[in-house]
Structure formats: structure tokens, C-alpha cells
Length: 356
View 1: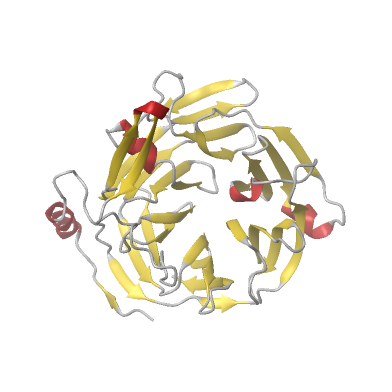
View 2: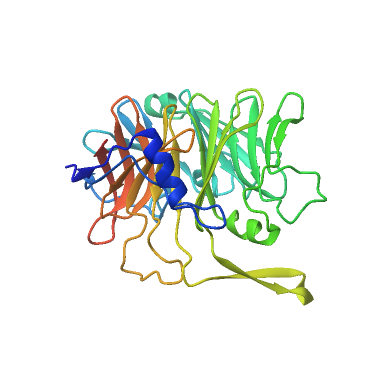
């Protein structure tokens, strides 16, 4: 139930943002509306040790996570009842299996891609075939990717790379790249860097979330340390749409020259930003914190309990406080409903839904 809303006229919204900007160019997000609403839990607890991603497909929720009992990493659940309908794709290194592919997935037009960055291979399969056939077809091929690659998406004919190249200016690798498989080369690149200090940038962007819109035209990235949100158009070439610095990542850089490596320490006021991001065609949906301090995270305290919705121009639209820790989320924009992997009071992983 909506507890309060605060519509803001565009001029007033701009003034509010300017008023809360700090000396380093960061400003707290001012949402057009805020409310409190809990997730409705669906089905039984999930029997998985870790969840990499979730997607919506018709009447189903696709959960990509490692079930240590069955060994399966791909699971289909009923959107209505939460009943598990099937599971497949075994954990492992043999053909048709995966080690980490469930952690980095692309789902477009009914086809799932598992990007296994440990084995440098991609598994592709049709979700319809998974639901219909006893032995579905799973194709496998090698991934060509830069050594500094952090995140990767498979578009069929192209890959999108997000690379952590802050301290690697001599490699010739750009921070964001579109790779054409048929041509075997990069066809578009961008080196926009939200953080000027290369060592701080390397630290912050070592833990980053991101997603690509279902139509493959836009991409979004958000930081775990602090809260920086970037949006890009990627349909034909990479073009920046918006760059929004909401919460400054407060990190102290510790250099160890004898090992030619550098280490980091969070400062007292360093706050958490984005844990997970889902890119819709219309809006961006995030598992957002913005409150908890990185250095003081008690084990029993829920983190990332808020759903923050943004426009593709970075405009903060809605903030929903759920009181429940959110691990992964996605949105059915036709239903106007967020689906998530959350935790219940006993700390068990559960599927939940939230009406927007």
C-alpha cells in the first residue's frame, strides 16, 4: 500500500537536485514518489546455494542458480503458483554443462545464453525446447573476450563487453565494446570513465551490475560501491545517454609497490549502491540500498531492501521500501510487476512479486 507520494514539477525537481549536489558532483537521487510495500512470496523456498539471474518468459519465471542437490543450474517456475516445472543444465565442465554460466546470462527472443567466464564458453538453448523436449538441444561455442572483461552479453551476431580498463591504458582495449562475431572485430567502442582516479575507478568497477534491454537497443550499468548509474544506446553503435553520480564511492587506495599491486579500504561513510539491475524497454529496475555502510554490515541486517526505478535518462522515478533483502530482480512491464529472489524471515531464498 502506498504510504506517501511526492510529485515534483520538473523545475522544482531540478532545483532539488542542484541543492543536494556535493562538491564532487554527486547528488542524492530525488525520486518522484516513494512508498512502502512488501513482496508477496510465491511457492516454497528455493533449493539453491546461489542465484545468478532471473528472467520472465510468458507465464514462467526463469531462475539461473546452482542447486547443489540436483546439480542443475537452469530452473523454470510457474509465475502464478511458484511451482518448479523443470530444471536442467548440469554444473560442471563437460560439454553441455557449465561452471559459472548461470551467473552471467543473456535472454532474448526465447533463447538463453550462459556466458561461462571460467571456461570461456557460451551455452545457448531455447526455453521452449527445454519445456517441450526430454533431451533439448544445447549448443556450445568458445567466447572471444578481453582479459580485463567484467561483464558480457550475447546478442547472437554480437557481444557487448564491459571491461575494467582503468589501470590498463596500454592494452588497446576500450571500457565498453561491441564485438561483431562474423567480422571478428570490435565495431564500436567507448572509453567514457565516470571516475577520474584510475585506481579508484578500477576498485569501484570491479563490482558492477548491468543489463541490456530486451530489444537489445540500450544498456545500463550501476556500481555496488557508492551509486553511479550509466545508460547507453547500443543499437548500431555505443552512445552515452546519461551519466548520473548519486552517491560517492568513498574508498581509500592502499598501494603495495613491492608486489606491483594495489589494495583498498572503505572509509567510514562509504555506502552501498546497486546490487542488481534489470533493464526494461521502458524503465530501469534496481535492487538498491543507499543507506547501509560498507564497513558496518551486520550479518543479520537486511541490505538492498529497496526497489528503485529509473528512466533511461537517469531520472529517479520511484523508490519502494520492501523491508526484505533483494538478491536478484526482473520486471514484467506488461503486468507492471517486479519479480525477485528475496529472503524470508528465516533467511531462506524465496521468489516474490511486487505490483508497481
